[in-house]
Length: 579
Image (tube, rainbow, N blue to C red; front, side):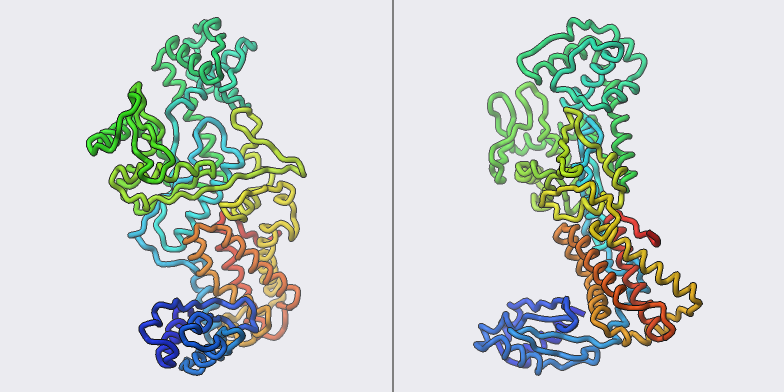
């Protein structure tokens, strides 16, 4: 419909000769759906845009354009409104076509044709497997999964990936934490180093250590482990070195494999129960095993993209807007995390993905230019990488702010949150605010079953419609789809016109939400359509004897139900038929 209106305005501009013909294409013809029924179904501000070039007031320009338009049959009326808007009213047949289209397409309404040439790899969560996911990760999970669903509905080919950082120092510290907990199970023989992870989950991880490894651990000299270095990190590194030397690298690796596998099972289970599934789980350790980091470094050396300084190899990321250059190979020959990032993102492109989207915490702002620089250094277009920076979550229990820290063990697991408030409430509240805004998660509101709780308010609209349908069936009225479509003209109240206009917006909401990565635009839309329905429900009767009006209203209710259910499904939220 918007494209049809753009075309007739374009023709009108040519015929009216208000501005020179070669200037017409320099102005974008915007068509907006009206939010108020007395402003028509659609409006355009083109008169305001070109009035300067036409050397006359916008209202006069709008009047000339409207009179020049050759009105098609489906365009019932055209009105001009100050200061220069052109309002368009479409006929009942057009509205009927919309409602028929929604009912015929059901959950495909608002979908765009798939574009296999536009493949996206969406990476999100990617939390180190050093502890369970906390409530902050929950926001990443809910947003990432919903964005993937919206992008697919908008026609994109999307794969979701979780990067497993299962190698390096943080994993060694996790194993140190588990081994100290194992040794202290009999009695508190060791002081837990400050650098260790100290959550209650650490104790459960001791149960997966292989028996053969436990025998070797029991041989450890506790006196060697009771050292105190100058700082926490040095103490942890020294203890890791002592343990590896005492039990052997192979035994340490077996323990690492068992503990990380257990931790990943917990993470995967928590995400799956939250309705979040990934197409790929990409292991850093596997990347190392297949020499992908070494190959990436070799390519950079061959291209002479690295420079040496203080015995280390550096990439000049300042050429790509980074605040400083970055080390990729340390002076002792070990590769850095940045080297892993370069190899990983090059691998993403080598797998054939056109667009890479990473969802990262807002504290990773400094990563943007270095990651783009790393991609460019491997001969890929840095603009193929898009970084979405997710703001933090603050959790409140009542008026008390809950502190979260994975190392102190005082964090609130994501699983605990969604088990307390419910998956539907958790997922909706997580995406109900723009990703670039801080989120205060109100536990009390999430559990409240009232109109103040947005997800309850939307779900209740869907349930109310189901209740109306059951009541109509219970009364023995015949549901005549053809009669309803034939009498769409009966849907002429202000509420009905506004609901039809809102239904028509759904495809645009999908497109805009996908393009702007703005999942909250969909959640806001669902709140708006639920509000319109509840207001309509309070003013109108649906279980009535008059067949023409009743069946027409049933058509409208079915369409509202379809759109609410589909929109909620994109957010990972259910649409109950009874509440």
